[in-house]
Length: 241
Image (cartoon, rainbow, N blue to C red; front, top):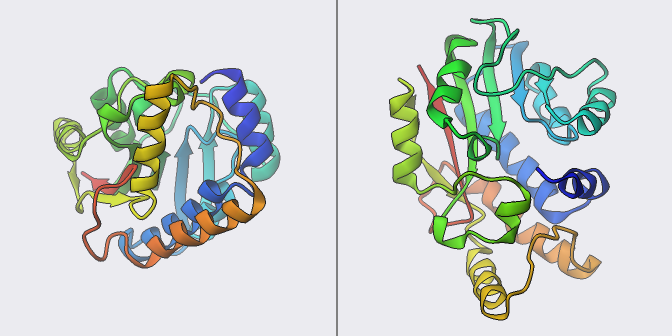
């Protein structure tokens, strides 16, 4: 990702509506769907500034990987131990057969060979382990945001399922999320394309709107994985061997 993306993440990940509500949605989803053992071993790959690490730590002992040095330093401080730097798809140096869950949260879309990356992650799982996958949806929504984030693609349910199956994995169902705000996001994205507006700035909106968006998005913690949602900005699943 461009340096500015990491800088904005570090500045906003504790109070931006998207980060805050998303962590709650993911925590509820893992609680219901992952069926992790007590004291599970968890690895987050592409942890950025480490904003998900405290959330993941409620489920077990967490390790993390981040290839950006500055973000890795912030994440290491948050985690309380060094964060690794093994890149995908090889994951060189990451012990195989070690983890009960691997989290790749808006990461797989950055990797040219997503199937090879998923295969390498699967090798690092214990028997019965799972990969928690979140990806951005809808290639037609491609914009400056994807460019500065160095995305290779956005996914449909069909293309994500194909990658998971090609890696020799099965999933527990592909769930849309960030659906309730999707119409507003589509309108904003289309308006931006018509006016050639750069939408790469992910800074939070004014405080009042930030609170409203967070409350709306957080409602999905009760819905994702439980009831079918209309298309959203992202797709979420758990994949297993």
